[in-house]
Length: 145
Image 1: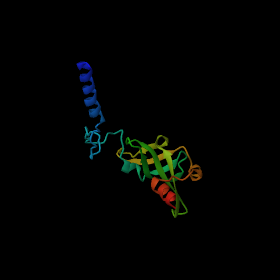
Image 2: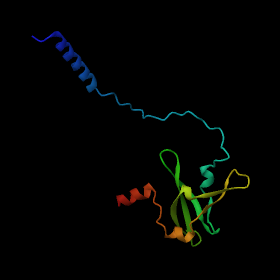
Image 3: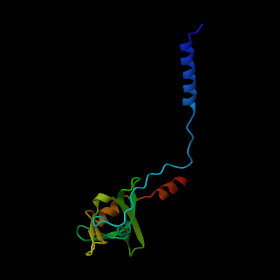
Image 4: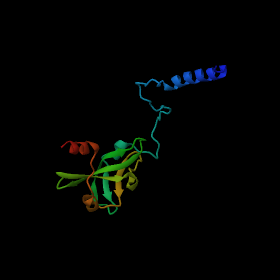
């Protein structure tokens, strides 16, 4: 005959096992990060992405290189790179090159509320020799061919 405490323990383990075996229901609503702050103004140490996109890019020797055409932003919202369009032959041909955001020297306008230009340590020749930037849409299109 089996002692009563052994049967009680076995029954408890059986109930626990079935409870652990049940999967928690999968929510059809994705987890969203909490929104806790609503900034009401731009700080003087910040600039708007719309001011950076379209900004003139020059070399350290003031040679015109091109314009910022896009920004590469990571999943955490930090800007990692700026895409610069380098024009050739009256703007008929251009090349897009990405440079790290940290390599940009951003000069504000006299009023401080916009960007006057962006300076790079690289020259136009350096960027023309660099590999072209390819966004995911171009990479995916190349894979489908």
